[in-house]
Image (spheres, rainbow, N blue to C red):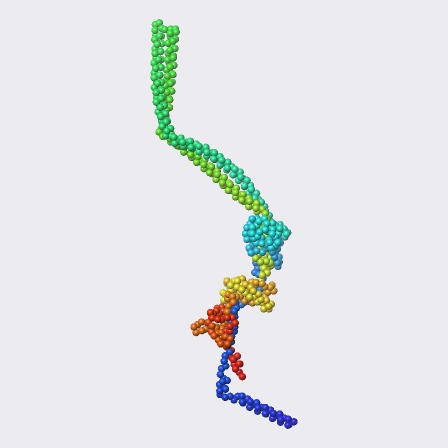
Length: 572
C-alpha cells in the first residue's frame, strides 16, 4: 500500500516537472519574435452590396381602429310637402341600412336609402335634369328597375321605374298634389280670360285701322285744300268785289225806282185832287179811274221801297274776306285733320301693343300650363330619399321617436369602413399630408394592411388628443372588422424616391478633399477604388446615390473595417 502511494507521488512529480518545463519554454522568446508578434495586425474591410430599391422616409405612431366617422342625418325640405312631417315609424338603433331599405316613415311616407355622392336637395319632378336625377337612375338600375337611358333626365321611363320600385316595396309613388292641380286649373282659367281679352284687343286694332283710314283721307283732302288756298283766296276776293259792285248798282237802281214811284204817286194824287177841285167836280167813272191810278202809284212806291231795302240789305251782306284768311283757315283744318290721323295711328299702335302684350301673357301661360301638365306625373319628394356615398350603414343613434315632428336631426349613422384615430407630434404633423400612404400593423393579430391619411388637424388638441399633439385619421384600404378597438402601428410614408434607385448604407459615404461625396468600392481582386457620388434621400439607414461612374447594384462598398476579425485571423 505504501509502495503504491510512493509510486503515485513520483508520477505526479514527473508530470508536474514536465509541465513546468514546457510552460517555461513557451514563455522564452527571441527579441525579433517578440517584435513580430506585437506588430498591429492588418485590418479586415467590412463591405455591403449596393442595392436598387425604392427608399421612403417614414413617420411611425400608434392609433386605435374604429368604424367610420358618425354622420348626422337631417331630412331635406320638400316643396311637395309644405307641412311639418310627423314620425310614423322611427329609425331603430343598430339597424344596418342597405340600398333600397326604408330608414324611417314620416307622415305615412317612406324615407328610402340609396347610394350616391350627391345628397338629395330638391324634389325630382317630371322633366327634371341634373346629376341628382342621374344618380337616382343609377340606383334604380342597381335595384333591378329599368329607367331607360341613364342620362340625368327624369322622363317617362324613370317615372315608371320609380312607380314600380315604390309599388314593389308596398308604397305608392307620389303623383300630382292638390296644389299642383289647383295651379293648373287657375292657369287654364286665366288663359281662357286672356283669350277673350285678346279677341277684344284684335277687334280694337281692326276698328282703329278703319278710323285711321278715314282720318287719313280727311287729312289728305284738307291738306289739298290748304295747298290750293292762295287761289281760293284770290277767287273769293274777286267774287266779293264783284258782289259789292253788283249790289251797289242794284241799290242805285232801286233808289231811282223809289224816286220814280214817288213822283208817279205825287202826279196821280195831284190829278185826283185837281179833279175833285174842279167845278163842277169830276165824278163817276173818271174819278174812279183817278182814284185807282193813285192807289196803284202808292202801291208802286211801297214795292219800290221794299226792293230798295232788299238791295241795301244785300249790299250790306257782302263780306270781303281778309287777305290770307282762307289759307289760314284751310291750313288749320288740314293740321287738325292730320292730328286726328296721328291720334288714330297712335290708337292703332296702342291696340297692337295690347295685342302683343296679351299674346305674350298667353304664351307664358301656355308654357306654364304645359309645364304644370308635364309635371302631372310621378314625383319624388326630396325628403323621401337619403343618398350616402357608401353603403351599408349602421344606425348608431336615433334623435326622434314615433309621434315626434321632424324639425332637425333624425339619426346618426356610421359606415362599415374602418378608420384609425391617432395623433402626431408638432414636427411630424408638418411632414404628414392627406393622401400619404400608410402601413397598418397589428402585431398581436398578425394583421398588416395598407391605408391612406384622410385627415390631419391644423390645430393641436382637437378631437380629444393631447393639447400638444395634432389629430390624425387614417383610412385602411382593406381591413377586417376584427381590428375595431385594437391598437395598431401606423408607418406613414412622408418622403419617397420616384421608383427604384441605387442605395448604399449611410456609413459607406465619405468626404473627399474637394468636399465631394464618395464611396469606396472593393473589386473582385480585393483592390479598392473611390467613386464620386451625389447623395439623395436618406431613409432606414440607406442613402440614395447617383453617379456618372460605373456603380451598379451588387457592387461591394466599404462601410468600415473589422480589427477583431483581423486579430483573430493573426492569432496562433
